[in-house]
Image 1 (tube, rainbow, N blue to C red):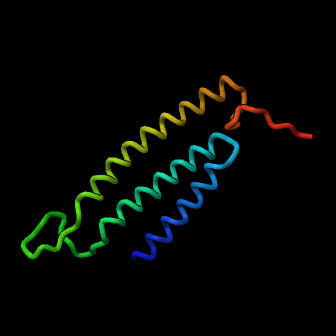
Image 2 (image 1 turned 90 degrees about the vertical axis):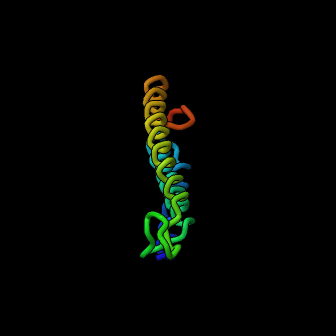
Image 3 (image 1 turned 180 degrees about the vertical axis):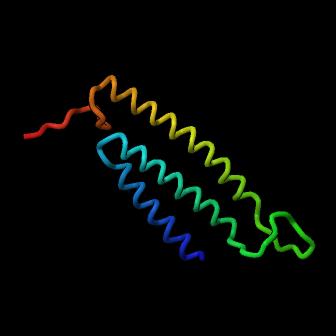
Length: 110
């Protein structure tokens, strides 16, 4: 299970980094979202993957760590707010600049 989490985190990070380095605003927004998903998965996996652990502490002491779960829930809310902000910012930049390039320059086609 840990190998699946590691591969998924790596793929999400690679795809997010590739999309973030693109020249248009929409792929950049999607890339940043994928990077935030990769960070959330990484934080969640750092708590240790327990399959039969209780959500709350029980008598035998085998329970899931609640700190990574709280960090991931907080990161999801912050990531959603930042995604909404970046989408509005990209829409505003497109309306003012007239194109959706990240650097604001128009593409020269020959």
